[in-house]
Image 1 (cartoon, rainbow, N blue to C red):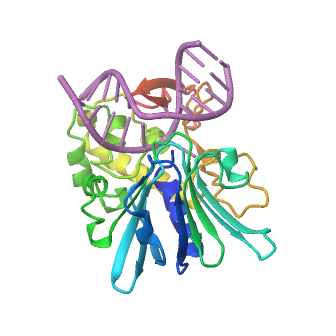
Image 2 (tube, helix red, strand yellow):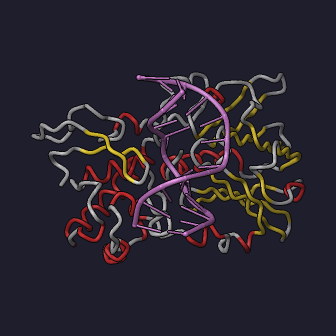
Image 3 (spheres, rainbow, N blue to C red):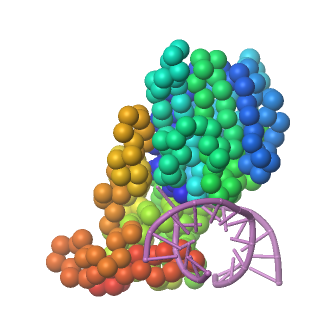
Length: 293
DNA sequence: TGCCCCCTGCAG
DNA sequence: CTGCAGGGGGCA
């Protein structure tokens, strides 16, 4: 469910609350989510929180032995950090991921798959409704050679316009290509739709038919909407349900260009188009048929 | 390169 | 009840 801006928001939040904590207990519920020997995480310190594309990497260790906890939230994964005071009252709750009532319910919930408990009594929950997400423990030196990490393309910010043009050499639709994590990492359905609207490009067009100017513009707009997504803390649709929580209630949804705006007026000045919805590669695709060519 | 699959839950 | 959900892997 989360794309790069949502995962980056979660990363920044966890970085503030988790680094320096010591894991005292780990619980794995069910056998689908976690891969590795969970006992190896016991007594380790959280050293840092990193991100690779849409995956999080929590660096843990003790002395010279370091491990990486790879986490992919896929469509419905959530990370919820909860800290209570000595009276058992919520002191802090940091949430990120798929917007369900799990965010405001008592934990663990029926969707909790992994729990990490820390020395100070705080707990990190990995919840996942649809069981697509995964958590994997690997030695730190093996993180970069993990299959998922190894395949990832560059982040949009690191990509030159020449490199971007090269990855567009495909008969696939431009939208499908933008979302191909092996080619460029981090873009999902929301930001692909919105970046294409920004660049005035029809998402159904074949990637290889974009000219140099269009490709350059598109890369700029990808960076623009991702930056904006991060600035607004990602997109969530919890509609104020974050009351009393120091949460990750992002507000990018208030800035959607076309995503989920089917039937509404195109936001471009002097365009009288109405946003349409179609399916590309099995994913809902929103665009303005008037100004996106 | 397209399709189907992994799953659960919710809106229409 | 069907279709759809912000992801990605495997298959031919």
